[in-house]
Amino acid sequence: MNVFRDAGHLFRLALLFVIGTLAFFVLRSFVVPRSFGEYGHYRGAAITEIAARPEHFAGHQTCETCHADIAQTKSAGKHAHVNCEACHGPQIKHAEDPSIDPGKPDTAVLCVRCHEASAARPKDFPQVNAAEHANGVPCQTCHQPHSPAITTGESK
View (tube, one colour):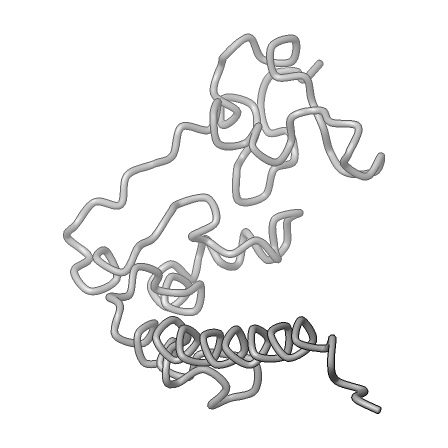
């Protein structure tokens, strides 16, 4: 009674499986970084790499230290919870050297990033069709960006 007489294909399949498993682990050792899994399902060295990158953003606290008047105006308006650099861009260089002009954003382009009419936005969120609303005129012509209640002129 030779049970394994015709079972050569099973042994070949098992050998192929073992070789495949070993090849997987060898390849994995070359592909997966050594620090993977150090902090759960993450690459531990990523934290050090990210920390080594240069900073670009100063943070709204830094802006508010020197621009307290604007911070006060902004805190009373609809943009109270919008960080300064969301509109003004990264300002670490200006924070380190105030003589560097941060420049003023083009409100005709900037404001529509958030306020262009879109069905995906909540209905109570202020939205405009920029082409009909202002015809390319900068928003600050009628609205004060830090507290965007209408200040001059008329809005459609």
